[in-house]
Length: 381
Image 1 (spheres, rainbow, N blue to C red):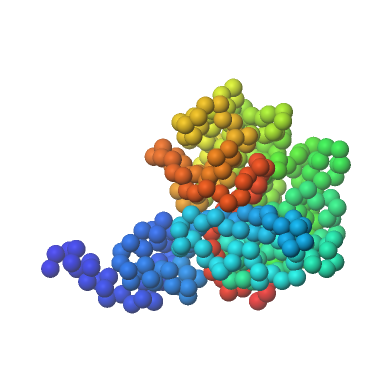
Image 2 (cartoon, rainbow, N blue to C red):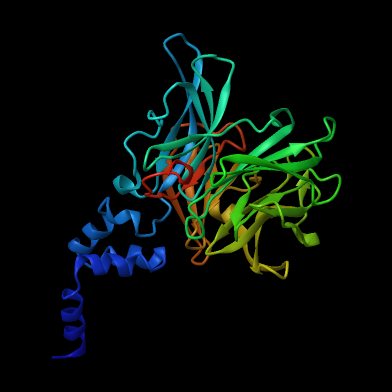
């Protein structure tokens, strides 16, 4: 018997439980390839019970969908744009009807399968909750008041199931009404079910850019108008400032800092419009996270990508995500209202779909979603 037949015979002798256990220890890219081995393996990987153990890949984007109710009032609920076809929708209804008692649910941040939403109550109609939910398991947690809501400029979510079953919510506080400088951070822990207040450990006169932020290596990362990246850990003990190179510092008087941060394959990415040439995006990576030394990776010609000249970042198109397992970035082309992807390694462009919701705001949050098939949120156990 030749080697290939021996390997096939050995694989056939594996029990389903052992196959699932092996797959649970592999990276997502490998699991996706193993779906093509056979129909049986595809069924094992896609089975609802097995998905709780096996790592998942990016399946699409949550976004706020606007509509009119029966009283002609504007309402907002989440909707979902899948990128994997029928396989991408891992929940029955993206509007999250299991979260009862709310007349509007506005998705704000998504992190590793959990979704942070601002939810306006049916009654009293002028009150709202921040809620963290898992769309795949339909479990949700209402966050308590932090007592600092009046000073909160932004909320961000941190969750990494490979490290901990607990999530954290970061409330960024402003102390100056005129300039919006950061004064501190409140951190909610699902382990304790409470907020903790931390004074500003980054330094004075820093303003956070209205962007999503990145949760990586147990720390939240934020861009500032002062051309620095700020990072804080979930305990509020470690405060870090990561400087940018001069060639990464590009901004516009009308639109502010023209940059995007994300993470892929455990590496922090920074993408900015190139100074004096708005048709080029430059891609940088923090390959050695501890060194704070940026490495140039790619230049992307937007004229070549879109087939049109003179398109500007965050005016004509928006960069909404980097794929967590490969060098694939996702754009929304605003004038055409389409979702696109670009493979940075191969230079290939793909039109994914036309969007159901027109993107008027440059920061309409198309939130990248990776399913997390857990039965419960940590603080409900």
